[in-house]
Image 1: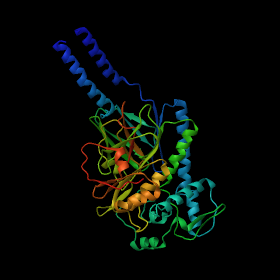
Image 2 (image 1 turned 135 degrees about the horizontal axis):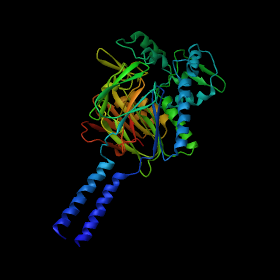
Image 3 (image 1 turned 120 degrees about the horizontal axis):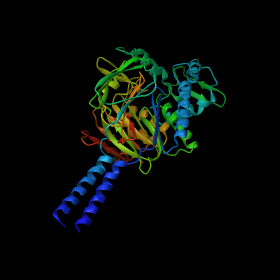
Image 4 (image 1 turned 45 degrees about the vertical axis):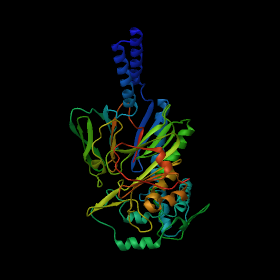
Length: 349
Length: 119
């Protein structure tokens, strides 16, 4: 009996220790810089040669999109903006028309809170500069003037042959959208190559397809104010996880933070939100939605999410209160030691 | 069943949940630091001994400290200083970047807790 039990014990111990010797993680990783951020590609169970090749293709495509869609360096988009500012009907590279059309559709869904044609306002704040402004704020009268001109996507007509504008202050800046759109294109590219399990992560905003072997992908959501993980989520299938925060691009004047997410209604950085996390299927919608919900703030995010068809939202306000809908609460797992008030909203579906 | 049998079974039952939790949910120690920059090919750095590294990017030099298996940006020529304020990275999967200067730090281990970090 003693011998049998000893063998049983050894077997269980061997099984437990065997867990330590898991095979090497079969994930191919690559990284490169584009869109002013770091792009990370993770491919599960893909032949190394194919992984290298497809990763290189995606890098080249990102570089091409970045160059073509740049709002303030010579590009297809900045050339279009020049014509629009002079109210000249113009043609443009047909490759960017779907991008502009989708940005316009999402802007209208958001009630204009995601506004891709406030490029002049963003430039006025200095967010087209690198490095960002130090110690100076834009002229208040200039901000007021641009807000009163109220550029919206409705001012621009994208026809079969020509693009026209009726508002000279309308200028595209796709900073709150292009990254998500590019991720969607990259995912389509992966699928066309037969790759079904992957993550494309652009500076912390990401879309996953498939899963990590026999388990979901595990995503950590970073705390907006501390250098630690706030929460985690397991995702699989086809899911985008996007966050917009006031910590991404900002400068300080007299100890006050001025970040890059401008409220088109006031012309100033949106003041009541620290970060917004959205889970959605496609990355372009998730990208635009995080911007719109950030601007909407704790009082209006629920209505805006409904209008945009978003089903999972977490918004952290300036007081540190976490606002979320019940479906998001059921998907997200907060780290232990979280010291924050949670405000649960009505259902979104 | 002798007393030794009971102790052995108890020991195994105690160890298994701990190992399961440690392997699937625990923080994973980093094996090395991976530094990427737009100016140079990626480099790997051991996490010991303690030392300072100086990485050149388009804006200038980012200073990176390695100390007792951890790493952090000490200084960087960016206006926001987000990288410096993000503090120490200590476990596998830890990531920090100075985007304006195009330098990133990633702690690499065998079993990272997360496949990606959203921020």
